[in-house]
Length: 82
Image 1 (cartoon, rainbow, N blue to C red):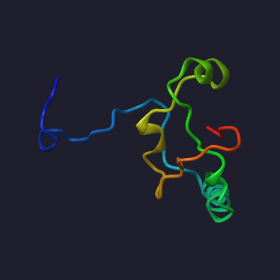
Image 2: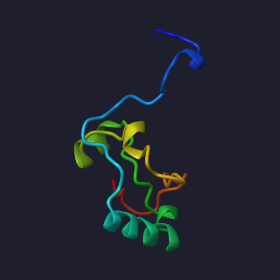
Image 3: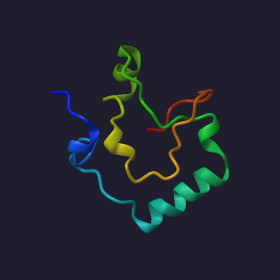
Image 4: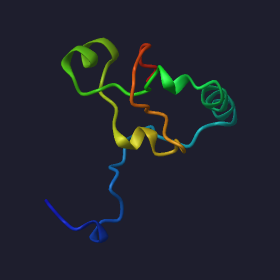
């Protein structure tokens, strides 16, 4: 169904198992951001057959709802870390 965004509570569908990061996960993410790992590693599995077969289900928007700033990047030199 197509509806104007102001009629929707959220534009991100809920995914089971998505929760805020634990303190240890946040510490690891801070290192990832500080070291600029997102420059080479996108943290995103694209919806392409080869990637889904290799890495599993493709990334959904809800999986990164607690990531601020987002770390998807625009160039991928290294393997995905999703």
